[in-house]
Amino acid sequence: MTLKREVLVLVGQVLAVDALFIAVYFGAGIERGSDRVKIAFTVVWTVINLVVVIRGLTRIRSARVNHPPA
Image 1: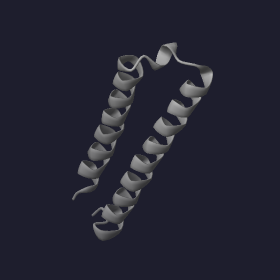
Image 2: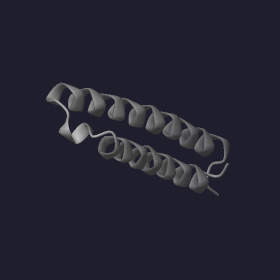
Image 3: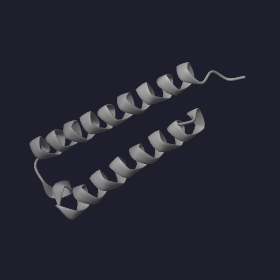
């Protein structure tokens, strides 16, 4: 894939993960939960985002190495 496409895929994946977690947060009533539940939810959300971003940045780096700009 091209570099521009990889960047757009990364942004889309981060937005999708965030939208999903926000929907779960309000849909499951976590905003009314205990502090411990909120912290655990935030940790899981952060770790999932980190995995998505690291994977995306790895793919972007690979695209840059395989297809350097002209």
